[in-house]
Amino acid sequence: MVIDLNDLIKTMTRGSLVPIWAERINGKYIVAVYQGNLSQYDILIKYRQLEDSRWSSIRTPKHIHWAVDILIKMYQDKEKTKAFLDMLVEMWNNTIPIKSIEQREEVLNLNFLLKDFENNCSEYLTLNNDGEYSIKFLIVLAKLLMLQEKTNREDAYMFKKLLETLKNCDGSIWKMVSTATFRGR
Image (cartoon, rainbow, N blue to C red; front, side, top):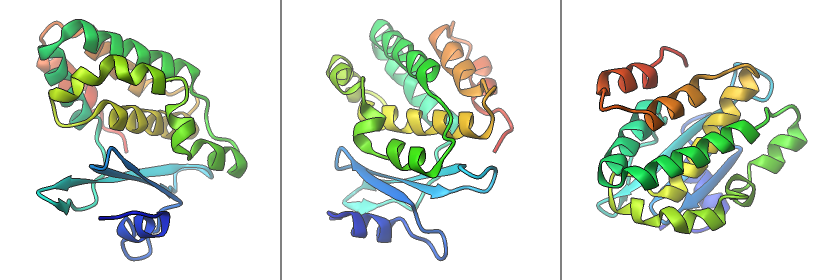
């Protein structure tokens, strides 16, 4: 099992792609952030998942993956999942782009990424029983995706649009999948 930061960095390194930050979430996920190339402070997000006592290959999170997970959670507990999505929309509204190395170092910290939401996590823990991803992992992933999107384009709206589409999902999987698979990065 991976324990310290050096081991996490080594576990998430592939060739010349070395993370600038890595963290283990719930013992089941490793999330890593790499320097991107779309802007000076662009970040790339990758993760691994513990499956059958082995780490998966390094994966790039796609909006569709966690959106499907949210739909599964919504099917089991619509009200709680919608409240969780409201929390993510609030997070979106309060997320500001990264504009310096110092700011990037500050935000690439598990305590920062979960700030204001750690206490609320317990309210949504029952959603961990459905779908693939834990609430804590989804919050960290969402915050990183928001930072990535807003850093590269301050007027970006794709992530918020997907959150709103999920929150107002009327059962139209086509609409949600179309929004989640927007041809971007």
